[in-house]
Length: 515
Image (cartoon, one colour):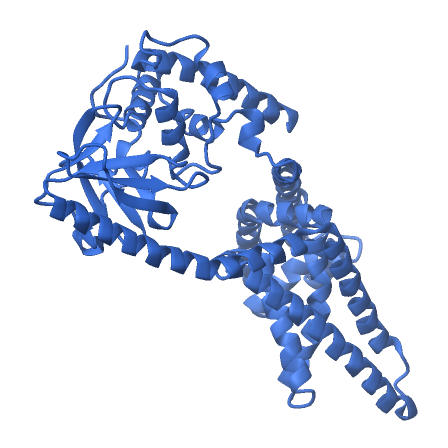
């Protein structure tokens, strides 16, 4: 049975449209007034309403959570209700393709004066907000066009070819003869190429910055890398001469070729997998470094007098140990610290045991363990990146067809992903009931298709937005309707449990496909 007690599970205030904004954000509220909202044909229920700079919000009296809201820029009309001359009421109409789907909201007030005041305020704020939105709409359209261009395959190929061409020019600059007769002419040619490529990459950077302004741009590590390289290139072009550190900065332009990892998805997947594996590998490498330091300290204590070149101090000792990790020339090192009393064919046990222990522990065991950890974690990270690339490509294909991944799998996929984190059956029932409460805005105890579709579409924390059609609803409920044509809490739970079971089966199959 469904539990109606509060406790574990999701917070209802976070399911729909949020909490009532504080008084400091309210332009006007119905505090001290009696406002009622028409629910159904003749059911007038008390409501708290408030106007902010962006929304007309509604909630039940005394409640902290918002039951519904209307974006001010989507209000098409706010007029007086003329159906009943004895009733002081006004109607707020919304756009058909907007957040509220063309729904009309009817409110009653205590007097005609209150109605006129609310109508005037709502109309004025709607006009102001609409002007603000339309002022930004042109810029957003241009940003969307820029993003489409930069994601296109032709753009990616063109930028990749330019990066390769720039890399070839950099190599050619180092390979051409440097005789004085050719130096001035070569310098002018390559400087011209340098300015050309720098200008092209700077334009690309500015286009990317415009398309993903501002926080989304800096969230990408590749964008930050591009910004650094292009900035260094621009600095080098503006200051061609100067001190040595400027020349060093100019040589960093050769790192432009690394931007190929961003253009080529396969290379980017390998690089991302390698970077994802590094934190685990670093832990294994720390163990190897600590053991190597121990051997360096022991070697300095034992062999400092016999071989000052190899073990005179800690730095020399550590450098010797590092050389031994390559297993190169270790027999010469043994001979260098060998006691003179032992002949050429005799074995000095002290250095022999030291070097054998060092090679066995550090080279044969720890170094191989570091490599094994790197390979193992690289495989896991590569599979994760490969799965992510597959999902991105799938999403792009669906977007080209005007669909979303949630629409293809299940329109309730975002909600089901949230519900899947239940502890036990009782906790799942509690979570589903909280969803039911959030969708049942009029507190009628049943859930109609309109309430379900509008409520799911307004759940702000889900991405993409849940869009439920009548066909989706019929498939979901499978004939489970009460006599009033709506779902009871128990019927709603059974329907959601069926969808959740199918959704989890699909997820298991997909995870099994990617190993």
